[in-house]
Amino acid sequence: MSKNVLILPGDGIGPEIVAQARRVLELVNQQDNLDLELTEALVGGAAIDADGVPLPEATLEAARAADAILLGAVGGPKWDTNPDFQIRPEKGLLGIRSSLGLFGNLRPAILYPQLAHASTLKPEVVSGLDILIVRELTGGIYFGQPRGVRLKEGNVREGYNTYVYDENEIRRIGRVAFEAARARDKRLCSVDKANVLEVTVLWREIMEELSKEYPDVELSHMYVDNAAMQLVRAPKQFDVMVTGNMFGDILSDAAAMLTGSIGMLPSASLDVDGKGMYEPCHGSAPDIAGQDLANPLATILSVAMMLRYSLNAGATADRIEAAVSQVLDQNLRTGDIWSEGMQKVSTTEMGDAVIAALQA
Ligand code: NAD
Ligand code: IPM
Ligand code: MN
Image (cartoon, rainbow, N blue to C red):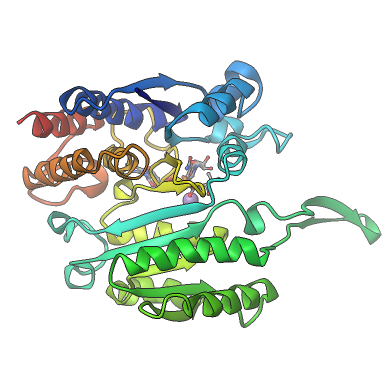
């Protein structure tokens, strides 16, 4: 029976990078007889413009019905000043994650050896880098209640959010991380702020408790400020990192730069059954949108993750990753990963090259 992939291009560079990823998906669908049906829907600013809301009911229904979802990026200055905070593009993305229960966010930061010189860090610091950041995605301060801006005594406005996790939420993301570590180098570093925040005291306690079920995995703990420093000092010390929603957001952008560019980092956001949404870790890059400059590789690598985790097509995923590596061997680089002696290509040309490598 055919499987349905919902494609959500979104805003800014979203449609440009997704167009290339879609070409790749269409090609491997045909080459490897995957029997995938692709449909598109609106989310984010594009949906606000068309329907007045960032996550139209029809898009949410299509997302629920799909076997997997591919998302570009949402957001942009056009919508940043919308006075109704609920009518922001980002709410569309957060709404899908939350409504579909996509709590397990995997962000693999892998350095392709060809890009050792594209990172702002010294090649010897990053060469051989292979980190997996496991980020909790449907809880924490992103979703905690109460939240808002209120008037307090003296007519002073105060903004507030709530950082909350219950033990079940911590346990389920912990299991994702321990399982991932078990399948890799068996080292898990849990990142928290247990010296200040009670919610992360509980986080640490639950991770310790879980580690008894995973005696083969070595668990360590690190405060988030130190983790940020260690990521740029000596990133190869890490195998798997697990952390909450906001810390994971920040640390994964830092980790992205270790791989050469944020344009290289894919992600998977999974529910309890492994159904998922796949997207690059970067945003809609308004500064380069509409100019055919963006790096489509994070989105193309997200397609590979989708094939592996949700569509039972691991061999096809391997082929896509090998094609990306071949294109880098050909010295083709979008601006974000370009360095002296390399050939600068556009978003479309990068897509062309990956397609050609898959056809060779
Ligand atoms: P961003 O990731 O969009 O851009 C940061 C910098 O990285 C920019 O200089 C951009 O040009 C560059 N960059 C990002 N992706 C690139 C790519 N594929 N190729 C080359 N360069 C790339 O972050 P930002 O500027 O803080 O946010 C812009 C908008 O994107 C905001 O509205 C934000 O809310 C949204 N955002 C969305 C997502 C998402 O949809 N998952 C993620 C992050 C930010
Ligand atoms: C990401 C983005 C989102 C997040 C925003 C756009 C809601 O930064 O996917 O990393 O903070 O989770
Ligand atoms: Mn982010």
